[in-house]
Image (cartoon, rainbow, N blue to C red; front, side, top):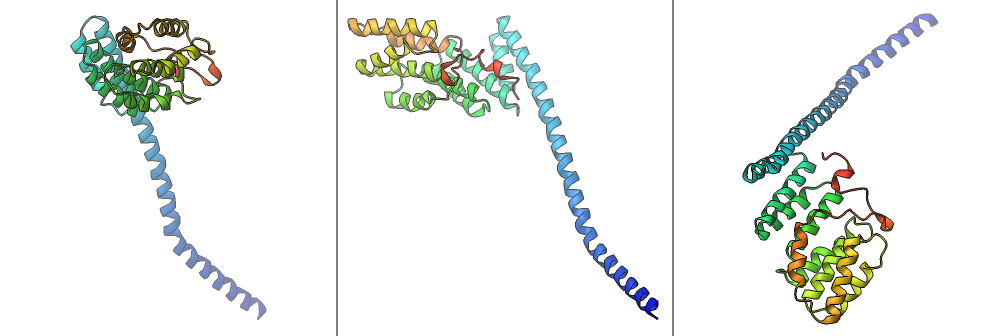
Length: 253
């Protein structure tokens, strides 16, 4: 008789477990399906991102080739194609290139707009700060001092890669705003600080000499011309020089 009762209890337990399993099955299938969908979505997005980066890279190189051959309009158009790409790194580089071309064509307002767009598009802080710096340089002899101060001061923070070039630009802005004493203090610092380039030291010493002689009127034109120069190496924490420009940070994505 005991065996009969145990068999009945086993059957009841089996039915109960089966009922619970049937209730849980839809939930388990749903979780599994969600995980599969998430995995497939990630794979699809990763593949799409890589394909877009590859496409942007090819078009960017074609734009550089066109530029090297003197086809300015063709290069600008190709950079424009890259500027619409989802690949943020290449989009920022293309916008910066377009900004440089507009600056060379003596269209600083358009250049500033493109460089500001590049700064927003850049996911790399080195590339983003370079775009912000070039915008400020292009505005040195036209924008109010307060605007320049607002653009440059954040770039001068301790861990920002272009803090010394930004400080140099702000020193020029102070000089042009009638603040020679403040400008001289900045130039003196830049002529001595670890990490300043030879060019930066020479410009600082020249600016100090002009301030002391009272003939600093030629500085605005020189400062504006600096916007067309190749980018200086980024300044790493501790005043150490980076190994190169934005391209040294890795392949844009």
